[in-house]
Image 1 (cartoon, one colour):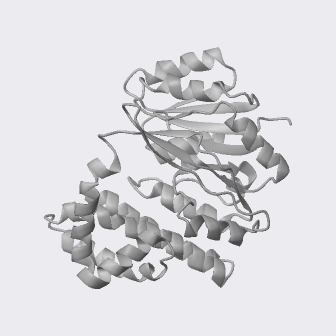
Image 2 (tube, helix red, strand yellow; image 1 turned 120 degrees about the horizontal axis):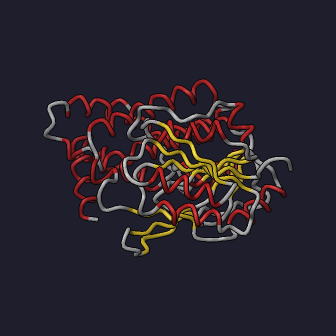
Image 3 (cartoon, one colour; image 1 turned 180 degrees about the horizontal axis):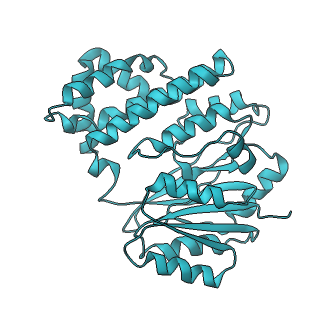
Length: 329
């Protein structure tokens, strides 16, 4: 192999406390044929210097310094510089916690070099307390077509939208120009994962959760949700549905793609009511009414529950009830 097997793209912005831990979790992998691309997105703390120091220690580390452009464009910059056969993404305040993860991932690729490999995530609080693990179930050996694998993932709510739980063949990525959309505060991963789902020819599951996501009490979407966040998700839904109409290969796969978007829509119900005093809340309600039809695609239990609740309490009532439910949880 002339180039690295894996390119791990890590956007960096003001994470001086966690950055070295993040990078070490990759350099400590038993599989050595990889490159790490650190994209310093205009950090204002010591992250820039830490990136350069880490690169001086390990020739596999490349550093890109750019003015602050947001996470999506930072990832895009890293992708353009990548040479690996497969691309992976890692947030600079998270880490990997299994040193043989890339070795085992390589074994899957050698058996079946698919376009996309999905894996799982362990979630921890920032004080180190374990919250939960989300690990996709490996399909039965006979269920290996794209439709069969996707149906198993989507119906069990295991086609996770996050970018950091996927490995993508670089050739597939560039053939379909799967760059991240710029300008979105929320929904960029969901929209991106939907395009991947539609355009890929083959998909596999790596039944592992080596990615450790550190959940912050402050700064996350549930603590800083605003009108733009929700409108961005609706924009992602709108773009995604147009993409489905244009690119769905057949009716069976189209149904699966709509199941995915139904879940993205349903999850907004726990977030929007806190904006009920906003002068534009009535306009926000119109967005919810516009896409209510998605709830017909309800194989996932959470979507089924939201569909039932909207039929009983209406859009406004469902928004209020689910907001209280998630706040209590």
